[in-house]
Length: 143
Length: 143
Length: 143
Length: 143
Image (cartoon, rainbow over all chains, first blue to last red; front, side, top):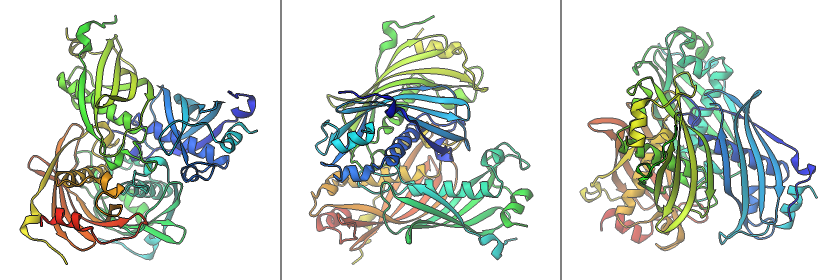
């Protein structure tokens, strides 16, 4: 079962500021920093829909579980710099029985710095993939 | 010359959210993450007073220069956790000819998680300590 | 011009230890930490062939230039944990006029934790893509 | 009870390489990176004495417990740079009932970049300070 209706595709926006910690000696944002930014964007998308990651881990939605990144395809198009105000855009593309696919972009005003396609899975406390708990599924698909 | 009048002591507050990236396998915030949080607080205090670190580095306030941390004394009093909303409080304690002393605290509502005394110096592009440029001095002391 | 003969495909191995800083509250290695590990692997592969990134940036191989990651496809297959001894395996797949393609794997003994296909470009000090300087090309292709 | 005989003061040395991830746009090592380096040094000192942090957390030495940093005094004397080979020197200064004091230095050949005095405490799984488990005490004091 995969759902990918329009309802999913509401984009979530998180503003981010670039600090010293995010840059490297070449003068621009270190490439792995964008993964941290995009993880913040996914965390805030879930929070905006009422899902707390710490509660997930503590079993508040059925068995204890956690989202993990299964795979990512990332294009680094333009460099970000110290002091930049960036926008992390996150869109849920589809929700399957055991995974969620998202598209993410890092924007500086009208310029796209980074694009990514991300697939998340849900794992139980034994570390194995599991079916999305129904309350999580309901929240993600809006049904 | 050291200035440490009341005018300096306006405290600056920056809200911070704790994300995955800030925690470690022991379940709490990794101790070095607080240094990143406090650096964000100092950057935002400077920005609130009209000072951009990238412009500093590019020489917009006279010769190119940069703040560096000279020393820190940090007390880690209580652990922060994933999803915490923290407040970074920064107060300038004194401004000398070549250094700035600040006090910083990391708060979760009424609980103090971390306190730090931080001394910054200004270095030129040759990496050597230098006198604070007058426009920087004026902004920091409010004179 | 693309070269991808056998000569390129000598694999480079870098041992890595997992520390607190690399993990998150879910108990496993934070996904973005693998990008830091793989960047270390690429840096050491270059160093093993006599190329220093700081010298690149300082113009020791012609004009000042730097490698940047253009795109990555990453599969996170199994979790790493605190104290793990990992091996970062890096293989140059092909060297084109303005980019280098590598395959990287993160291994724990016989277990593959992460695989990645990475494409690097070379940029000049103006931030624009440029042709690989001939000494760099020679070193990378072994010709 | 505090022990601080000569037996404690055997210094532990860990070589570290500076990578992109450790630097910032000002061109030098980001100040918080030294805390990561020094944590690696403490982890390796413990490992050299047969103590695994993950086993500590899993209760292999009595009740589950973990070291946490209680306070640090750090002096940043000189900047480190990309590609530097650094040495992290760690010396146990004293071992009390519930805390361990260490001195740490970050060296580049004969140059001291950073010095730190670090006090660790041991906490139980409830997050509260506890007495050092006897096997841990024995290992740390060499008795």
